[in-house]
Image 1 (spheres, rainbow, N blue to C red):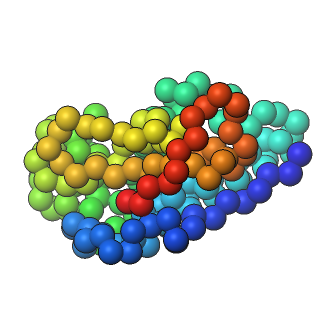
Image 2 (cartoon, rainbow, N blue to C red):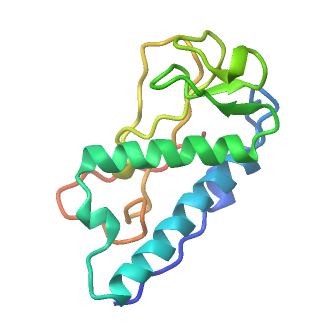
Image 3 (cartoon, rainbow, N blue to C red):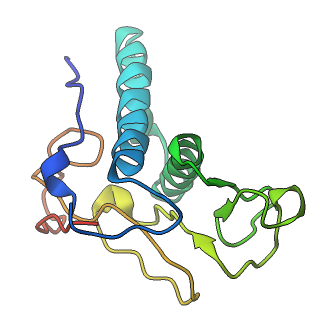
Length: 161
């Protein structure tokens, strides 16, 4: 079984959007590409050993947490001003570097949130908190990880972030 290396299409991004915190569309694209590359590398290795793909081994709730943590870390890596919130389970996921002592806050007011809940199924994420959110919403007929969608899952048109 051959695995296809996915690439994030720039055309799916809203080039007119004004992003906060000096974020660039490239930051989001690069963060998503990091996730695609990780799963390509890991799944290629697992299949080469005769094992299942990682995303087939993990339960959806675990996969959601893995994606959220990976996207948060990668967006922090590519961002000019945001870093990961070092407070365990703190909100938001990313904070402006230096705004809080040790970049750690239980419940901050200003920053960027990158939840991946339901991202693998391309469903929108809603948060009741008053901070910006971002998620890749939509499908092009394949799952986030580059294989055809299982029948019965809803197909949605991609929406720009």
